[in-house]
Length: 76
Image (tube, rainbow, N blue to C red; front, side, top):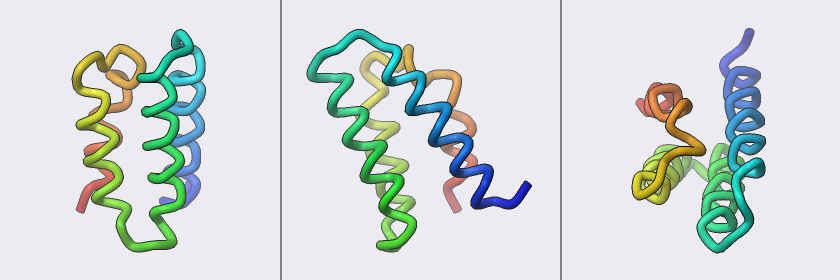
């Protein structure tokens, strides 16, 4: 599987996990960060957006805890 496909699969899994969490401001912030991350591959700020998503989720990381090491693995 190509790196691009791996990224897409990870983003899709992460989105499903966040969307399965209860509605609220925090969920919306995480979805917005994820959206920014998806678009960042074309803007060159991918690393910054991964870090921002991780920082945003650290407070209560239940939704993305299973993805933290995989997200960190995307960092150069």
